[in-house]
Length: 535
Image (tube, rainbow, N blue to C red; front, side, top):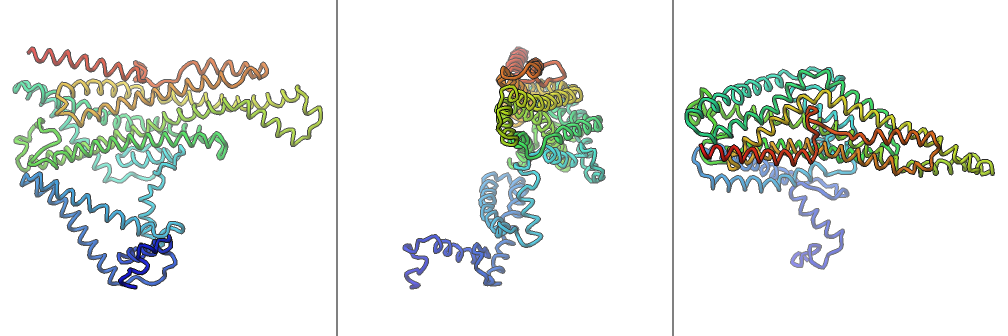
């Protein structure tokens, strides 16, 4: 039987036997997938797996990072670094599977150990998960992220932010002022004037303008802390008016899920670009910086010790903190504007189903009050349905007015910073093109993503307004009484004034604006490039 493999034989192919085969194999590495298997796994097995896990952590995590990012930096052996890094990443699949099988051993009742329950909750993202998409949770997610950089958007949060957080942000702010303002101006307008290196000047100037969007957002959120908290509170008050469990609430939740997905995607993309920008010099052979063309004032020669260590440390802290601030505030804007978009689209659905809901309400009223000829009369039917429609139109109008007021509040507060950042991004894109794509291939997507998302959410807001306008016209208003027709007429006039997002009231942010920016920036770039070439 042993030679014939017993239950492991090919002809033993029923599902219970196959799962038992897998269970036997996995128990040899401490993993038990059979809830009916109550025997204790041998301590020897646990000991072997413990030794293997300890060896993995030391060899393929700690030593791998030391070898790739320190040893190979000194030797300049890029091939060895790539090979060893591939070993580390490939081995991660083994550790990930083991960790997953241990954490989710009991999916129905949850992991038994408190530590495992805690880790499992963290890995499942908790309130940061995509299905946790109600407005209070999304704003709480953003609030948690922003408190890590001293920004508090929740007026009900009274705990003190850690002094360590303030210290890190202070170091990052000091590094930013020295590296990306003072040294940038010195390098561009004095050093490059002497060397005549126009490409280096354009690249470094683009770094300065692009980083300004981070500092502008931080400064704005600090100076207008109370105003921003007030706006967030008004959004929450508006959301509290939605009846939980209603069709409106369910449809709104579906649309808010897309909004949260959008915010998460943009946040991850910005953070990824920032991390890639920091890691790029670490994977290149020799000593490199995030921008090799740049010389920081007072740190020449840049590659000499300790100038290299000082410059790399401060650049890394400044960049990751700045990108994190930008990503967090951008997520806040995406959630705030996205909520208005989601509400307008949900109100559109309510308008389209208004007449059908009225008829359903009438039939339910008949079932409740009987089916006499009086109840079934046309006049009474019209009276009951129009009374229902009147109340629903009142609710829809109330939410529509709230959405308009919330958008106006946002525009009033954010218009200055939106206009400044819009101008900085345009200048940054031109500078990046002048510096050469080969030198700014990580800066360009970072900059373009910002202006694209501003125009994208602006366009989505305009589209939502157009959908609502069509829904108001298609709500079968011709069947309403005169009073409800008048209400619909007023709503139609209000909906024709399209909702829009602007950069300081100067330009409407939409796809037309995006195309105009791309066209104008490229025109300015070609003009400046030809002028420089002639010089």
